[in-house]
Image (tube, rainbow, N blue to C red; front, side, top):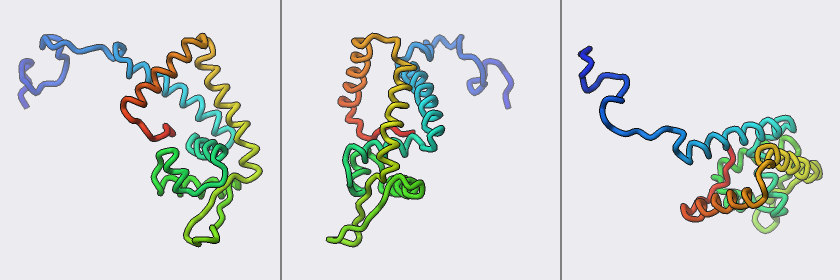
Length: 167
């Protein structure tokens, strides 16, 4: 290998190349990811303490809103594949947080719903979600929080983002 400092394939600093390179910290995406990672990690620890993953929480929260539903409909609502929903449903079923029943009209179709234990757990987990938000964003005024939510919703709308962020 050519060890000359002016070799075009050499590794190292390109400060002398004259090309302007923006700083990481100058990107909004950097700060969004930085904060998001910390918020998500703290929330994940809270969920794990309750023996639930963030993905399971999202599924349970949506099931709480929908009531008895099919895994297919649930997957569509939260933007998950059939395979991913199937795995989560099986895990929640093993934890006895949801039950699955076969519909009479078509024995190939299943209806899933939260068990009493699942229904009881959702409000407790929602309080942990609220607590996590308060820990990270409670120092911000309500107008600032509302502006942040509005800005993020506008990005979602503009880019037609569909899948619920889970992991």
